[in-house]
Length: 231
Image (cartoon, rainbow, N blue to C red; front, side, top):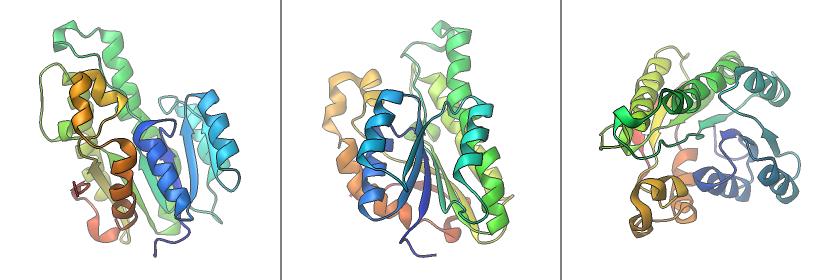
C-alpha cells in the first residue's frame, strides 16, 4: 500500500508527539482519527482540521470508551491503515518504593492496558481487511533503564513484548512494531530532566523526520523493534 490517503488512528493527540504527528499527517493529505482526554484542546483541533478528520474525547484506560470510539470510527468499508498507540504518562521521578500503589496502577492502566484496549477494538477490523500497521510507541526506557523511572520503564518494556507477541498473531501482510521515538524535548521529558531536555529536538523538529519514516513502516517490518532515525 502506498502512503497516500491513509486512514490513521492516533492516541494522545492533544500535545507533544501526538499533536506534531497529526500536523505532519494532515499536511500530507492523510485522514487523522485521533483521541485525547482534553476536550478544550480537541475542540481547537476540530476547528483546525474538520471532517473527514475526527477528534474524540477518549480515555484509553477505559475499555468501554475505546469500544465506542472504535465502533464510530472504523468500518468494513473504511478500515484503518495505520494504528498508532502514542498516549502514555510518566511517573513522578522517585525511587520505586516511594511510588504509591495508586500511581503505579494509573501508569499501567494508561501505558499498557490503554494500548491493549485500542488493539482489542481496532485490530479485528484490520485483520478482517487483511492489511494495516500497528505501531506501539515504546521508549529508550523500553530497552534500557534509569533510576527513578521504574514504573515507566516497566510499562515500556511491556510494550516491547506485547508488540512482538502481537506480530506473531497477525496474518501475513500486516505488521506490529514497537517504535522508540528517540529523545525529544517534550513536557514528559522535562518532568524528568528539567531544563536539560532543551538540548534535544522539540516535537515539531522530530515530526519532520518521523512522519515520513512512520509512513514507510510496513509488513516487512513486522515484529521488529524500530527507532526513529536521529537525522
